[in-house]
Image (cartoon, rainbow, N blue to C red; front, side):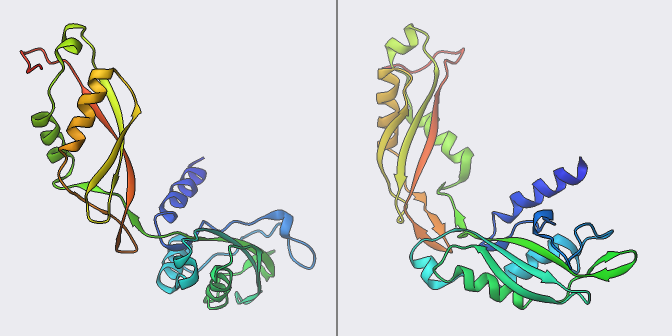
Length: 242
């Protein structure tokens, strides 16, 4: 159980990287004679999964065509790990195109030797499958100063409509808006309504919103859509109403 949890955690880490491999796995349906389907010790990249991720991260060159076409996804590759740990016969099981397939094959072909699989204490040849993930490095838009600064802005800017106060209406309005590559906030809309007056107040607040730090993709500022909750909560002390 601990092993499965570790694998799941490490896979989540992989998707944060621009061009990586998911944790390699020993896939029985791919084993046929003269390959061993049940070696006593499975093959291992020298240094383990973390070392494999580091190798791919440092050596991967995201294809220019794929970047230009905004192509992201997984290339499923397969290769043979020989008795001496060398890699041969890499091939694509399912690809992405735009140069990603060729880059996955190049990365595999350039790999250093693995620790080979063994059976009865003797090295054996096995077939191995490796999903190589191509994903842009992205950051989300951020309010300047972070969450505390955003909360402070909302607290100072928001007012509670009188009718909503008298009816004791409170909750969250989900607002969706775009942060441009210049950090400007535009086109706010209500994603989840709470009350007509509270929805209108949330949109009014969004119109007062200062510039954000824009999202980035591979260190380049990009436009991105954001969904943000604006909470209306009735305080115990006297509040400002309109």
